[in-house]
Image 1 (spheres, one colour):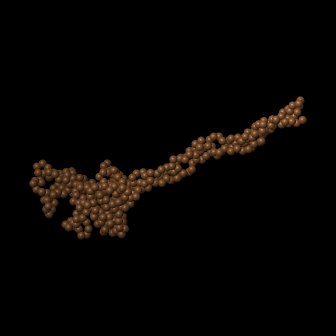
Image 2 (tube, rainbow, N blue to C red):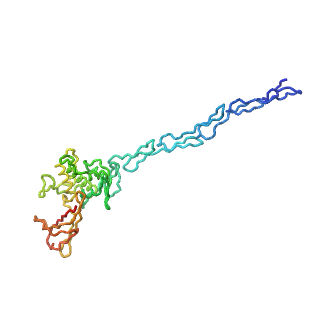
Image 3 (cartoon, rainbow, N blue to C red):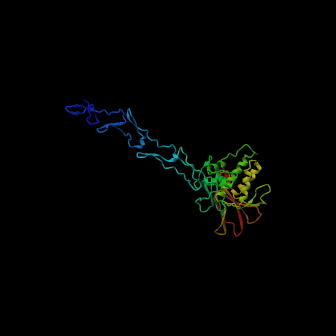
Length: 389
């Protein structure tokens, strides 16, 4: 007969010999791969869910399929696609960890903090507003301020004006690009200063911008229009004048004994200043309707300062020599077109403050001469030169 042996884990118990004999084991298999099946004698089958968690949060959330068991999770993709948020990583114990955000800062005193590009993580580098106070590192300049991202100071006036010709600056360019000499080179600061100083060259900010003016073809067939040869030459002379001011070779308030203009001649010169000549030439050349005649005047105004004639400046230096002689020393000139050189020099002399004609003393290839016949007289000298193309 059937009986119950009190063990829930057996089934089909029967009586025999006065006792209840245990039957076979109870089948607890629930056909669910997601549980562990066991049997408790007191209560019967126990179905305990299995854990599919591998303990690594970076592997995603594991699940269980009743028919097959644990299923791997989808690994975490911690990259949010925004490079400005930094590089995200995954911590096995906690999952994705945010990266360190990119912080954009100003690259220097003439730039401001930019913005980060999500695609690259790179910061932009915008210029500080023109006029922003800065320090150009040159103790001799004043009123340092930013212009197109470059710190530019105002140079002090030169008490010993030594302007260079436009040809000198032209030689620092070749093919529209910088060609530094062994002692000099045009700089971005030169370009920025010129761009601030003039309307004609407003916006110029690179050495190539300067060289483009000096290397502009002046053989234009337009003989009278605003882009004629004379107007191009005027631009080159004006640029040379602006560079002389920017490079402290001449002071804006330097007096000019100008011989330019229809009402001026060598016997009736009108006194003005470097700044006034610059302003007049700049006004002419920045006018789109400029004429050939106007450009010639602008050329004259700038050129007479660049070559020293308008400021009564030459390289000739005089000193006493033994025996009441007078020693003359001078520098080799640079041609206005940037080419050629002097092959010989002619020395002239006349009594000081006289209206007499200069008398030729001699020709020489040297850069010095001693006038042993000066005696006790007072003389003024002039040195002219012959160009060797």
